[in-house]
Image (tube, rainbow, N blue to C red; front, side):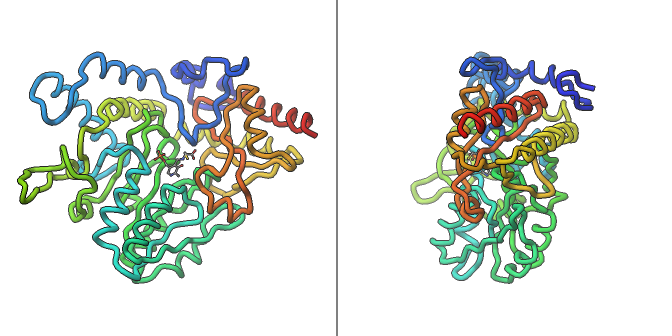
Length: 414
Ligand code: C6P
């Protein structure tokens, strides 16, 4: 039994919290309670130290230099590529492309794959649960190619309607792009089924793994997806880094996304030949330090174990959901059966911004608003929600504090 949480768990939460310096501070005079983990989660010391060690010890540009520091930096950068290959269980290391995160990864595919393989009257399917980063790039590609964007509707609980999806699929469907887990509602989508159905009509599938990477096991070979996108900063790593996993045979057929730097083999004024994978998609000096430190985020997750993390976060979610639903004026938004540790809610008569601001005065960080999912909010008839999202370093005591604060704010504003 863990003394801090009173939750049966193989994880020592106090020891885990000790690894996160940012958690040990007061905000507005109160101990910080950080429940904005779906926006970005906090960084353990080993990630922060990796950044400092890189800049203090072996900062150099990679791949081009032959001096010692350049070789050290290159080795560290490529080590993360191998770690990320294992993290998502990709068959080949060159299937891991470093990007700035999920938004850039989706834009890369929409623009590069879309440019070549989308034709007039083709169809791209996304769901009603998507983040703007998995909507706008497809709108842009469809507009350019005169293709059609179709949306899978969702249920009141926030689940994808698979029957409608099945009917939407046809020989015209070229791309299906869906999140693994929803940032606003926490819904875990049945991606294996979605991928299988898309492949039956010959479409390729991109999975936006932004909200899955820190919580769910990722096995791109078992999923069968064609592309999978991850942001480092949502899995305890630094901001400004992430990956695109792509099946080798597809990446090989795709044109480069940006030109210059590492992506060339040979340049003359008449013609450029492009580099091999993965470098074909990594133009310019990449975000070396943050990619190097991402390796430590992978180590952190592996040391704790994804199953243990998920088990503990599920306990927190169940605890929070039960308590929130017991407050009469609170309405839970997003009640899918399978969820990551995200709970959105609204409070009768209180605007979500006001609730967020008042919670902040009590040191509690939540996100409020549309969470970059405006079409989803419109579908639910909402302007926005309050969203509490939990991580492995959160505790039941923190949830108690959230609940107590919400009750007091409701009473105060009545
Ligand atoms: N969601 C949230 O508070 P970037 O910014 O590129 O790392 O990730 C974009 C993105 C794409 N898809 C999903 C499902 C996401 O949740 C996000 C980021 C944050 O919910 C910031 S809006």
